[in-house]
Structure formats: C-alpha cells, structure tokens
Length: 194
Image 1 (cartoon, rainbow, N blue to C red):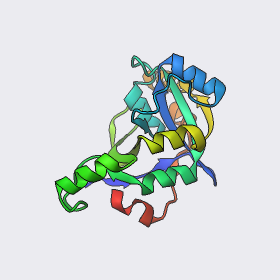
Image 2: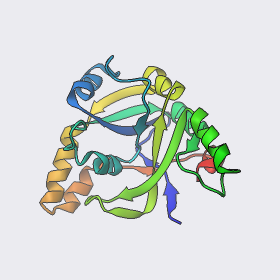
Image 3: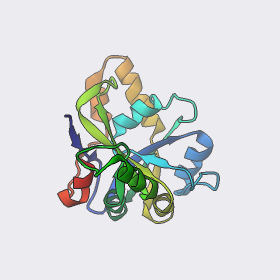
Image 4: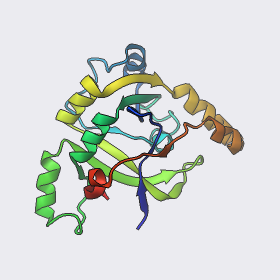
C-alpha cells in the first residue's frame, strides 16, 4: 500500500489549496478575493493542497475550463473541520463496517477524501498518495463564505514552470515550485481517512 501524506504550503493559521477554473470564474475570484455568483455552491468542489497534483489535473492550465489556476489560502481551522467531517470516497473493508454503512456515510458527509498518486514535474506518479478534498453542501458554503483568507491567480507561474519542464530545465522548474511540507496534523483528525 502506498503511503498517504498531506503536503502543503501553510502558515500557523492558513493552508494553501489549489483549484482551476475557466477565466470567467477564476480571474474574477482572484480579483475580488471571493467566488463570483456563477460559482455553483451546490456542486461538489475539489481542493488540492498539492500544486503538482493540480498541474496534473488541469494539464498545466491548458485543459478546457481549467485555464486559470488559483491558490486559495484558507484557514487551518476550516481545513481540519473538513477532514474531521470527511468520508473516504471509496469503500475500504478495513475502515467501514460494510458497504451499505459506507454509502450512508458518503451520502451524508459534507466532505470526502480521495488519495491519488502525487506527481513529479513531468507529472509522473510518485510513491506516495496526495490528498484531494471534496466539499459539498455545508462544507462548500463554509469554504466560500468563511474559510477563504485570500485567492491568487497562479496561472502565469504554472505556465512558466511548464515551459522550463518542456525545455528540460528541471532544476529551474523545481526552484519555482511552492515549498510544500508535510502538514502537521494530529492522527485522530485523519485516522478514519487513511
């Protein structure tokens, strides 16, 4: 089984997560520091503490509808609330009494967790899994209305790093990456998600 780890850019009070949107949402969110009205609060929204996993997901900001990469600084209190209230996105016999119980938890949990292979600069999988956190209902509202501290457009950074990777200058690309570190969290907060 692959090791699971939350690596992130964080301070004493905040953690940075990433999302990618079409410019009509992403550029306005970065400009205004909040999501515009067209952002759907009632849909599941996925946040990723890993910059490179976001690059894998959005194709270095080249996939349609994901051309604007946002770095969203949220409160650690909110992030940890989301983890405490999360359910795994897939059934795990060792963690769930049975599949029916898991489905009930999944239907009512405001957040869900997926562990996907972390990526390197060439977007190849690494030996450990990185967190993706899906927010729905109450969690999506809390995220948009009270957890966000700042929103910054990181599209230019994504493209600059991608150009260096294409040119084969991985050292220069590495130097530009956000300095993500293992996120310090008590085991009781995430034990049900490992």
